[in-house]
Image (cartoon, rainbow, N blue to C red; front, side, top):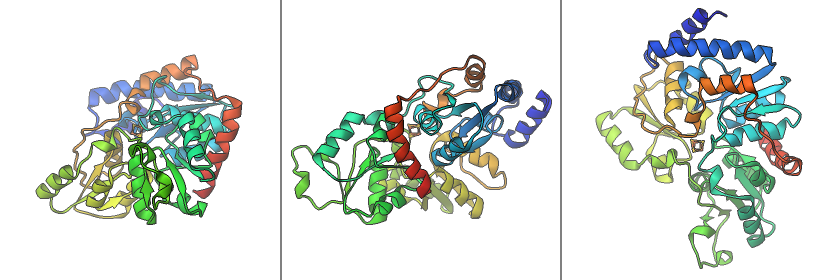
Length: 343
Ligand code: SF4
């Protein structure tokens, strides 16, 4: 495909979302990346939170953490370039120890992944012996290695039910844990938030942690009330990393994929997505016939570090290579593979 064809393809999806001069410049970068990708026998995975020009030009596969983990597990390419954040690239490496996994921006982290360490999990396991540990996929490899099974926002409740135990340690997202507790009818405690309390005497079935997504924690019930006042017929979708109060005030809550499918399958006068900005842009681009309110104010600063320029440099200079120590990888792989099997 020529640069002009790449530009025309991007323009068909993104005019009105990305300014034309930016599209022309980015089409040149995308064209170079796509040529290099073939030369180096690489596959590019693009998370839904990638900026629209990147998302709509270079990934071979797009999706949420779970979908991309599946693609990473199936690829026969030599190199996996992960346009997402570090924990996602680590998950790809966990599933593909023999392949080179690249993350275009070295410091693309995540507030949830940074909220907990492997040592924290070991302490919780000592405090609640025998209780199975579920960790959100938004964690680093050494934390996954301490877990029995991982989950994503789309299958968190199913994973908790699948365990079939009376009690579960669910880490590290406080809001996702509360939303799962509500969905599964379980009671939840946060040992780290209730100092001095004897947790063993409480009536609980979920043990949580105090991590939060710095993007989704920003949405409030007041935001929803203000939008509903102005647009009474709006359908509001929230991500389960939002607070339970925000989720309760919305019309639908689901993981990234569930939100996309909801917009595709329903017909409402207008939609508002309370989630990461770029994802809102990408859903708007994929559904030009739907009326999407654009109140974007929260861009994930970690996802925002992944650019076309850095992706090009990543392929050119083989940077930044993700490594996971083998003893950690083997243990983490069990938890991730269980998550993928549950679906
Ligand atoms: S949007 Fe939230 S959960 Fe996702 S990478 Fe950014 S900080 Fe982490």
